[in-house]
Image (cartoon, rainbow over the protein chains, first blue to last red):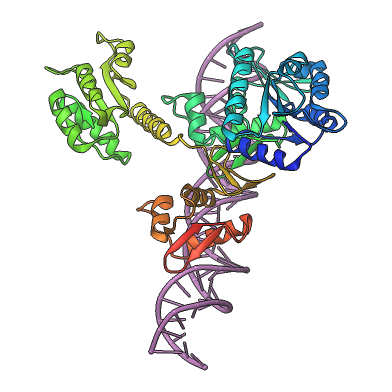
Amino acid sequence: MIVDDEPDILEFLRYNLRKEGYDVVSANDGRAALIVAEREKPSLIVLDIMMPELDGVETCRLLRRNKTFENTPIAFLTARDEDFSQITALDVGGDDYITKPIKPRVLISRINALLRRSNRQNDEEQETIQAHDLIIDRLKVLVFRGETAIELPKKEFEILWLLASKPGRVFTREEIFDKIWGSDVIVGNRTIDVHIRKLRERLGEHYIKTLKGIGYKLEF
Amino acid sequence: MIVDDEPDILEFLRYNLRKEGYDVVSANDGRAALIVAEREKPSLIVLDIMMPELDGVETCRLLRRNKTFENTPIAFLTARDEDFSQITALDVGGDDYITKPIKPRVLISRINALLRRSNRQNDEEQETIQAHDLIIDRLKVLVFRGETAIELPKKEFEILWLLASKPGRVFTREEIFDKIWGSDVIVGNRTIDVHIRKLRERLGEHYIKTLKGIGYKLEF
DNA sequence: AGCAGACTTAACAATTACTTAAACACCACA
DNA sequence: TGTGGTGTTTAAGTAATTGTTAAGTCTGCT
């Protein structure tokens, strides 16, 4: 999530991050940021310091109070000559700060580094994947949507887990066969459709999207 | 390329692979294998472990020294009771091993899997292309223009990807046919126009430019 | 043995993407 | 101003892929 009150900068950030394959959501002030963050659960937040009303530092402080964003990496944007020191950023729980003017390469490598770091922390063999309103728990072999837990049989769970491992990206049937069944097992062509169908039956229709001739993906 | 000193097995392999549409060349010992490989540049090699003189493992080691075969998938053939462990195969740079007796189906699906994997490796280099205000994401099979994501059907996406791989350069119709359809498929002349039309419909008129009598290019 | 759930297969339906055909527009050139 | 070559557009036909349902097989459990 990127937060800045200047549309130009927002566009610049969005463009460069998208180019790297990131999903980007934006907010144009601190208050909006809190709302958007709650809804989108971003895995990283870029906050401009200088914003009217609720500034970046204050926004950060509020975000950190929310348990959801306790460990979300937050990077500040700051003009070189702004009255702001690195210390303040770290004080309120920021993880990095990027000075304007922003160079795309620097932006990207910082963002990558932050995500790497946080992934390493959170990973430890990754036990759950969160995608939109689904939480998929590999150890319990359960899917939670809000309060309700959904049980899935093994194969269906494996497929969902695979799709959710990279939400949005398309997995071809071949890929799915390879990863779920392995290359020795030969199963009919329709098998996968049936599993997809059962998944949709249990989760709802709108999660798994078919791209004809290409494959399936998770979408919301 | 298949390599084995027993003519029966060679024949068995050749028969089954041909049936799947593969071009097969063979060698009946390790030394011949090196020569044939050099001449034929196979895209996959099946090596029997047990061969007189130069055995499979040793042949593999020699092949791997040659830069041409650095990334060529190599599968070993081994009798279940041969004194040979999977580790050895991996040590010398093998990618898979198939135990005798060989079941045709298993053989085929393993071979297919290996080729898929090696294709994917070479492919997966570039995941997104950006051209002007378009970001084309191959994994998500989506095109982004600023905020909005545009979905495309397979063929249209492939054509756009091709044009965008070298923005500004002109692709002749022939080139496009070759790369998208391949040389064995024959489709009518007007097919491509229709796809271009649909692309323009979805993206806007000004992206794809026609050069009469020459071809199409991406332009802004 | 009998049952239940998971997984697979098979037959057919539905859907979508792709291709073709045909009428039209444009442009260079005689 | 007509003509041939080339590209565009539409609509309709065709092929390919996926969806759906029901029934069959397999496995583990009581």
